[in-house]
Image (cartoon, rainbow, N blue to C red; front, side, top):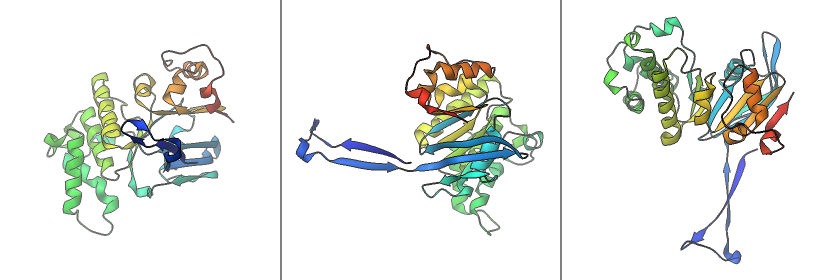
Length: 284
């Protein structure tokens, strides 16, 4: 269901009298909404009856141990895999080819023989239709996205000669050419040193906060990633958490789940007690 916010108009810093108060409802439609989704990998169910939504401006981290269904869910969000049951709804006019995607890099991708500008520009292919060439507007979009990722100076550099951190910036700029709304990132800091990882996280934060790009990111780097996100989807065996980061950090059940998965516990965990966070747990 979409969120509904109610605001009361103010005049000269004072609330209007009750007779003249105006309750203004603003409906925020989800960019992506999963409704009771069940997914399988090689005929084995990995996620069952999963429901959550991602709204414009959210920064969602998807975490969980290997085999919990993170990659399968990512494929479903991209429209590459159909749910066994349930549905995935795209809102706000979002089309499947308007989702920017950064997959985990392979050795072949890292050795791709093209210039930085050519790699970034190739992100516009989905919007080219049958045209055999890129338009002036698409080329400008590529340059604009390179500027957002601070790689303009690398425009003519060979992609395969860049560092790992520089290559990831190039690929995020490429993904942005396909979208002005939503980025899906699959383990974007894998293989990067701590300095390069920190710089990449800062850039992702900037895209989310300054440019309004909604981010969905799969990560195992919970210690660095979780403090930055707005929402968390934790997939773990027979229970799933979805909710705001603040609720997750205060729930000892969530922290214990992290410990069981072999990842760092969220700082500031407290003794377990019934609070709003616990109501976000979904038991399969």
